[in-house]
Length: 84
Image 1 (cartoon, rainbow, N blue to C red):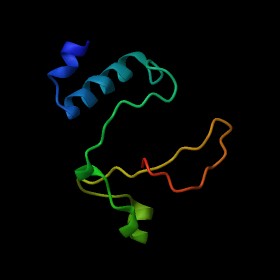
Image 2: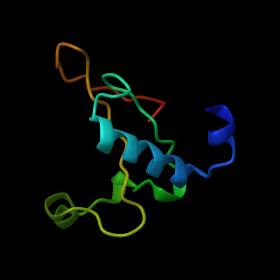
Image 3: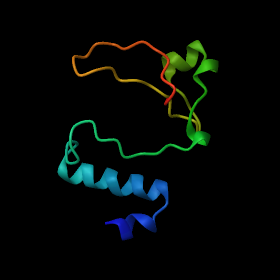
């Protein structure tokens, strides 16, 4: 597997894993498995999000936004996370 992944670019890895999830189901890799590394060029600057974008969505190349899901008891954790 490592030999296969080593020759692929990140978007190609996304496509590979998306295909596997489509064929075998969303939980094929386990619950909460993260498999995407998003380059900074694709992350939207949420400090500058407009009300219209909040309602209608973000268009363009920068469509990923940082978020923190919370804990296992589904409690919202509100704090500044230095990793996102």
